[in-house]
Image 1 (tube, rainbow, N blue to C red):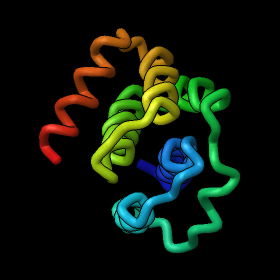
Image 2: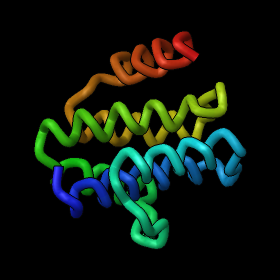
Image 3: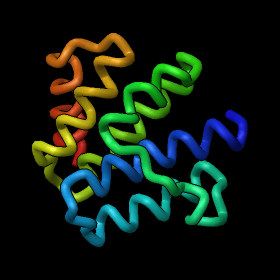
Image 4: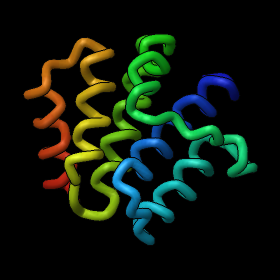
Length: 117
């Protein structure tokens, strides 16, 4: 995955994390780990953050393999604080729909991730 695609994925994830206007310490730590994993040294590169209305368009533009990686990262981010609030679930549903996932499949992935804890 090239630097531009890694940056887009990180913007998507950052958008999900701030969707509920509650940036927990666990979510902060997740963002730090994600930036390391995606080899982004400057946090400023993930701005502007992608909101829900832009998320579907952004994800559709990604290659299928990157869409999958992005969705996995999004679900991990959503469960980072041990709960998934309505705003985060809504963000995941919008992205999942853009990828062709049924809402039940999205909810199952969320449930699986929460069980893994």
